[in-house]
Amino acid sequence: MMGEVVLNIEGLVFGHKAPLVSQAVDISASAGDFICLVGRNGTGKTTMLSTLIGVKKPLAGHISICGVPLDRISAREKSRYISFVPSKVEAVLNMRIRDLIAVGRSPYTNIFDHRTKADEAIIEDFIQKFGLSDIAASMITEVSDGERQKAMICRAMVQQTPVILLDEPTAFLDFFAKRKLLSDLKKIASEENRCIIFSCHDLEIAAKYCSNIWLLDDRKLESVTVDEFLNGGYFSKYQ
Amino acid sequence: MSYIIKFVVIIIVLLALAVYDVCTGSNEIPLSDILNYIFGSSEMPEPYMFTIREFRLARLITAIVAGAALSVSGLLMQTVFRNPLAGPYVLGISNGASLGVAVIVLGSGLFMPSAAEVSNFTILLAAGIGAASVLLLILAVSMRVKDILSILIVGILVSGVVASVVNVMQFFSNEVNVKSYVVWTMGSLDSVSFDDSVALVPLCLIACAVLYLFSKKLNILLLGEQFAISMGLNIKWLRVVVFVGVSALTGAVTAFCGPLGFIGLAVPHISRWIFNTSDHFVLVPASMILGAAFLLCGDILSHTLYSQGVLPINAVISILGAPFIIWIVFKNQRTVI
Image 1 (spheres, chains in turn green, yellow):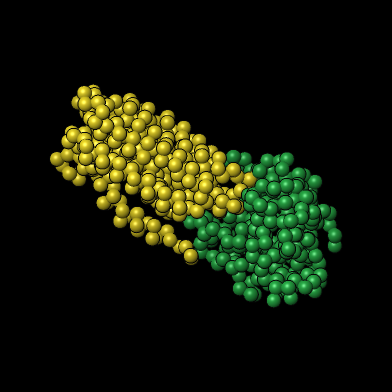
Image 2 (cartoon, each protein chain N blue to C red):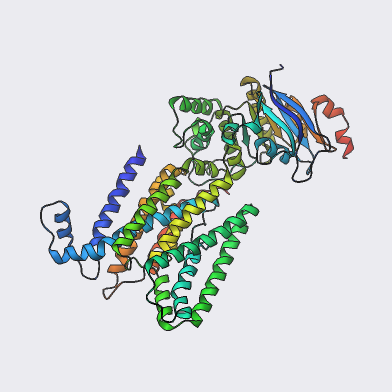
């Protein structure tokens, strides 16, 4: 089950101006991992994700993906190593689902966004895998939140990054759609051998699907197994 | 590709409007004479030739360039602010240009009572500086506040302040200068000389070409700023490029033609509606062509509706264009928000 380590975080301190963690984060994740980032409001989940995707600079420490340090490569190159799915996808006027998914190839295309046959084949392939063929020609304003998000995740796959981050992907979904999404993501992580990390507040559903948990609590981040998380006193602590 | 067919159609419409625009004016030139001349079957009578060379051609070029420049500006502002209500006018950029011109036109009476006629170059410079100042202000605000609404509020407030400053200047200015300023604000394509109109062309083409090269980035930006950063975009740099390009286009056009505000807001919506896409590689050229066509329509109508003279083009565009635009915006609304 253990794949090779793709994401390696060493001595990371993140925060706005003041650090949000009291001890530097050393943590790693492997290909095929499906990790849930858990933490109460205000503990810094979003800041952590923002730091990983480069919206925020780390206060200290290094992040490397597949052995490549992210602070040594350009922002554009970075988008070939890590992709991000925001919690809510903008309802852009007159944009088709297929256009949205095709954006995933932009880290590889030239200034005129010319896509090669290979690029188009990758896009087609994932549209089929995600069962989005029927709505690929629809406008993103015409489909539901769930479908739009599925398209955004499909876009992240098309981007072919070893690491995929999702910010609260279940926030706008109903109970059944949440379960469906997480089981789909778990399948993608293992079948496509990607490392998927998502933040989530639906702890019971998340614990059912994820491979392990990154727990952000008491100003420190640690990796725990699902069993450790469920029996580790986290729930009783905040009753 | 249906895009190519649509482009061919709108280019034909643009050419037809351009030919008709040359016909219209204080003394009408028969359409048949122009068509015969274009297709080389006969010479143009010299009086007509003179009118075309001296007046109509300048007006035609100005209309095409101004329409294209303002429409692209509006499109890019709507994308950068991710707000369909944005445009050079809404954010007070045109007002900034107006203030620059007001300082020159009205101020020439205040500070230099004996001043000779203000040169077109001075007006161009003043409008450019005015537009750039407002843009820099909005840029500075948008670097600090991420919230789009705050930036829009600042834009509206700046417009208000600028309008008030102009009011004060009008109050202290003499009738002749006030009249010439007010006429300038009504918009006109007739006062531009042929040389000036030709000078506008490369400026507009270069700015539009540079902005066109950012289409890929703008397409990504549509999906949100955080997402765009994760895709490797330098948002601040992109904003600076767009703002500088837009202020150059808006400033130049406003200097020559007055504040033609409505086009920048409306034409991007027409482009999105006709081409049914959000792709800037399509929308930038489409907005240029449709913007030129739109302003030509306005120009033709302002010259033909009233037989005794030329109606102010801003008024014509707003009165006749607004219902049409409202209809398009409603037709294009399929948002589920």
